[in-house]
Image 1 (cartoon, rainbow, N blue to C red):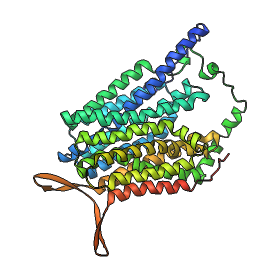
Image 2: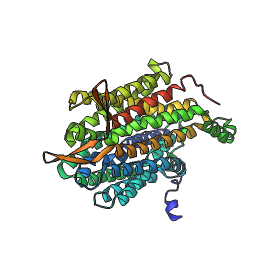
Image 3: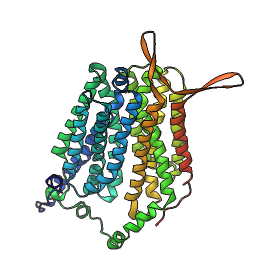
Image 4: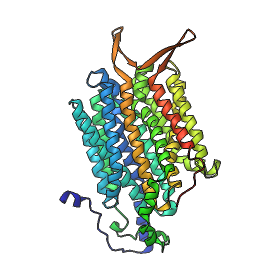
Length: 461
């Protein structure tokens, strides 16, 4: 109980000072809040993605196989999926400054421990605990958006916060890769842990639980937004709205579409560097730099996804979801099916992939489900989509790890790793199907087909 009381919301303080003094303090703390949300949640991602940079040296050292890494990677996603549900409810009832700090501290310590050799099962347990700790970051940020920003501006700042994902990916693929190249894979985990501890310090010093805990009026009072007289009636019917979500086939189809696009999203994030090193012969730093293009372009896709749908498609999500879904499949085709190392092609593929994933992450991962759900059950719709998405990501890691065979052969004194494939002959001509390409591109195309089934669906009240 004492541990749980640690997370109790910060007590409210009486409002004192002139209007000008309150306005100045509000501005300062809101700037601190959004900066912490972006930077610290970006550092959460460094601790979440650290393993992806080190897969090749870990396998090459004989420490773990790709099959084992697949199961280990899935442990994080499955734990994260569960945490998305539980920590969402807990964050609403917590001091978000402590909640965000504790989650990142636990994640950093897990990374630090993984720098030491241990049995694969213990590695998987620690990586799973890291996944659950990771699931504390997003709720602490989203609750902070609700506490510090009004309804009229929350959408804008939500888009700003979403850029933290791409910031974290870029930091991981560039800085962590530099550490691994210079010092080895063990120090990659240590470096990620140090980034995480820096984030803990930032959150603890600059993040605040709520305006009321700092002697300021609530955001509703300060912004002057009218309270809704029908609130009690809406609150009473929340369960009815949530049941409507659970029985709405369109929400489930969107969730399935999101799960499939998360297969391709995390296939590149988790295995892209390894693929470029093993299949195309890039160095770790070169491969990481190419994959980082995905993160940078994803930043633009995420930031402008709302503008794209509003300005070019009249506020409709279905048409851009189709366009960028096809772009996603094409980018994977360029990345996986063009033989040999052609840096310009691989960079172009990652630019297209990042842009499309940035848009689809917002549409399939949230906005489309909210569009077809009752207004008072948006959280339930996001919960359904969220757990489906990360289950898809977890299954992807298991299947990808199995299809990437770590038991390679020795050629010219070097160990060569094989990717599972099938050979067949048509009209006397030999062909080869790469199972990884079939799995990743197939998931992307199936995601497009699932999204098409809800093309004309209207919101249900």
